[in-house]
Image (cartoon, rainbow, N blue to C red; front, side):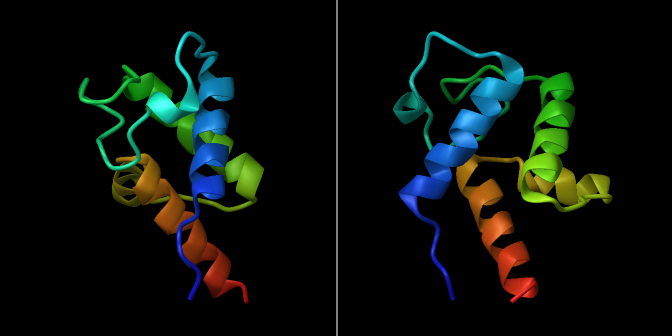
Length: 93
């Protein structure tokens, strides 16, 4: 079973920052475990940002997240996104 790597976390952070046009913070300032929404993290994201992040993940990793509840749980944090991507990769192996 693959583990979440720092490389994957950084890739996800860069994807989010590029998708949302975020500048002024460095990827390493984003806490991997803290929620992306709610102001506890370096990013201050809202529900529109959530939709853009989901669409970017689907495009980049060629997968579909059709269930809103699943999507909500996937984008809780950098770690939750990374864990989801690894689980999806393992399904295709």
